[in-house]
Length: 337
Image (cartoon, rainbow, N blue to C red; front, side, top):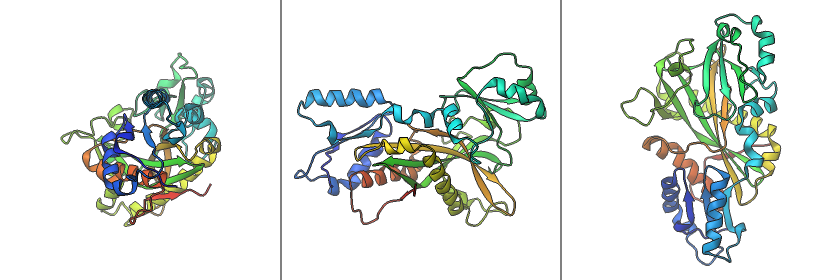
């Protein structure tokens, strides 16, 4: 079914300019006043979506809420965003680093690890590196304060691939909609600001703040640029190789959260931003480890990455949601769940 979406019916508190640019690109497919009028909302909290819908209903008392596209309720999605719940539900998945959900469980086994082993203490609801601290095993061994159930302890992911000697995190997007899940082929890479050495340095291990500054040491690129690095350390097909891994792991994640996928409808959707580290294996092969999943990811970065990745994802999402038969198609691939 096709819908009429006026430009004024688009609202968001994240990347709104990209939603509007998308509208301008797709206007010929959305500007048909002879079919059902709809709204497209994308706010990063349920309460903000509900507040905006309430405001719209006051302006238009006859407004049918079933004509509004907006994210699913938190009760269906919070577990994937919660690091503790995510690790618990993923269980013994090979894509998740070894995790201790209780500090007491970790302390029972702390003597089994070398003193210089690195662990990450994470608050269950933190994002973008907030509430994440790297600690040596010997430091945690003498710590007498239990951080409680709002934290988890995860082991450092070893033998990670590097981007010009620096740690990098891959951000991949998955759209949940209409009881299905779609993986987007475009992805980002956040390259940390200092050369990597095993340590507990926040700048080396965790922080990627400041990527928006052209003169800053932290960088964000389209993942496609990994193919430009060259050298003997990278495969010639590194970019498509990682794309295939991202698709595979995205499928694994969504299979573990069937109720969340099932809660989506024709009008209710969710954008997931999934963060990974690329791990080197033998014979020039690689694998992925999941860092975290964001149910309201930041979708606005630098102008270059917005143009190459984020805006393309938003455009393709609009093509799907609004049933547009675009001549260029889209870069979403449906996950076979």
